[in-house]
Image (cartoon, rainbow, N blue to C red; front, top):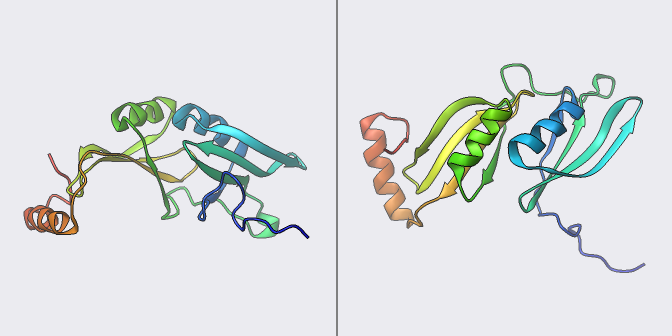
Length: 159
């Protein structure tokens, strides 16, 4: 047996795998919203059992909800997981996702940790944060800014 790299070529150690209601529509949405490239799709019994999308330099796996196998999508109010994407221009990427049908949870703002950051919810119940790193800060600088922000009660948003 030939020795292999334990991480498949083109993947990262951690690869998100999400479940959605309506995988075909989700694939189309992620293509329009985030520029996803479809790498694979396996359909069985009219359901997407497994699909792989490349967003930037990362892969996201997804499948349709399959209740008979105990595989469920997030409830309508969301499942508590957020997928994070770093992009060169967060404002443009955020607007593209909104134009594709994403719901704004938190508009794009400059954050105390140095990112320009916004939060969306997709039509399938998943949350996506988008950001562009504007400043490389030391842990001490982040802590000082956080202390200032949280003493003012603005939930971490910068100006």
